[in-house]
Amino acid sequence: MNSIAILDFGSQYSQLIARRVREQHVYCELHPWDTPPARVLAASPKGFILSGGPASVYAANAPQIPAYVLESGLPVLGICYGMQALTHALGGKVAPAPQQEYGLAQVRVLRPNALLPPGEARVWMSHGDRIDQLPNGFASLAKSDNSPIAAMCDALRGYYGVQFHPEVHHTPSGPELLRRFVIEICAAAPNWTPESIIGESIARIRAQVGQQCVLSAVSGGVDSSVATALAHRAIGNQLDAVFVDNGLLRKDEAARVVKTFRENLGVCLHPINAIEEFMQALRGITEPEQKRRIIGEKFIRIFEEQAQKLGQPPFLVQGTIYPDVVESSAPDRAQGQRIKSHHNVGGLPEEMQFELVEPLRYLFKDEVRAVGEALGLPAELVWRQPFPGPGLAVRCLGEVTWERLERLRGADAIFTGELEAAGLLTMKPLTPALSRGERAGVRAGTSQAFAVLLPVQSVGVMGDQRTYQEAIALRAVTTEDFMTADWAQLPHELLGRVSSRIVNEVAGVNRVVYDITSKPPATIEWE
Ligand code: XMP
Image (cartoon, rainbow, N blue to C red; front, side, top):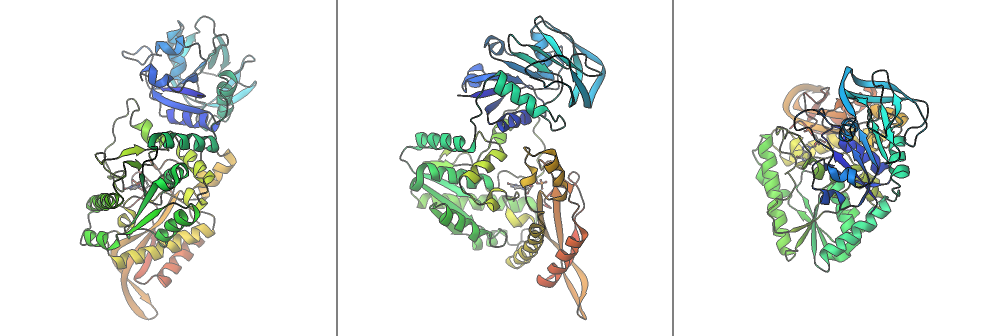
């Protein structure tokens, strides 16, 4: 194997380090710092990166560099806390800095070295402690106003440390620094490409399932689509895919998903029309969590029924991706409060009688998309904006009826259609690999945009007639991680056109409003 092991000391940026290494086309794994050595060494790393973290090396129970890392003889790069832990472990001195350093700083490189290009660089600092005395064998590589030792190395042993964060995009030379460490110092080969990922996944799926049958649930979302397409590439007709049309999809969406999988990819797809069942189950329900629960349960029941019809295949494809895996084992991260019961909706319960096939288990979202494109999935599917598991039910506030869903679908298609025509709908500009110039363009786009039908009637006038009809709220946000979001500053002229088209073309709507709340305090979806 050709990989880098990243040990997580609890920094909020740890996943970013892994993504930056993957962007160099080198496979890496992120593990909590105290993971058993055998697990970390299983991928035969060619070097270690130690992340930042909130502790001070002298605090009681402060995380330490495990002995096997320094005994391995492999190169080590310590970032922020990782650098301090390295210093502490090797006999140097770490002390509270007289002035804490948070935010942008300028570092000056002091001597030629393998890690940092010569000259000055703008970097992102975030630390309270600093290195006061280097361990034996180390030289200082760079300084900033508040850190006399902003970077250090012992080239003989291949040990490096940086006080700043090369993984965040406020450090423009960060990718080059990481490239030098990973490719030149660790000599890892840049062979982690969509093609190699596909090749390895196919081999792994075939080895796991042999000649047996496999089932997959396609939702039309990116992860389940790419996982299903990969499984199909690996085992062809041994795969059966089930697609449940619950009536809560967007305009023409069900037909598009079926067409893509059947006609373009040749997947044996069983579309289940369960619209009537879902509508029945949702009748009279207005409470958001209750809607989610009902939809989740119905989905599972229909899926179980279908699995039985298909002879109960022993394997199930699931689109678990690497952030899910990492987050479930990350150190010191308190479980957040449940705001909405997101991730169980449209998912399957753990106790189902399947062995899981998880071809995306080691991939970040941008890698999933690259693999999807390489497999021939259409861009509209690979780059689509997120869509919640309970679908339009949580955008149709109040009771979910077919008539109201059709109203919502009509308005949503007009809004997203106009955004698309204006080039403002795509997700593409949000990928982290973008140049800074491209990132600036994000401000003008949307990360997620949709219509919401409100259970509110208001008075209007059309022709000379009084109307008393429902209102549509337009929601469009920009965000990088969907944890926080800003409302999108859409052109007024576009909003005006969308509004007049909706009231003219969608029966039952006489008013359109634009949602200008950020998250927090609001959430992106309305329910
Ligand atoms: P909120 O509304 O909490 O949404 O700001 C954050 C992101 O999650 C999506 N979302 C869901 N995704 N199942 C999902 O798979 C769900 O039940 C669900 N609810 C919200 C939402 O669209 C946004 O991208």
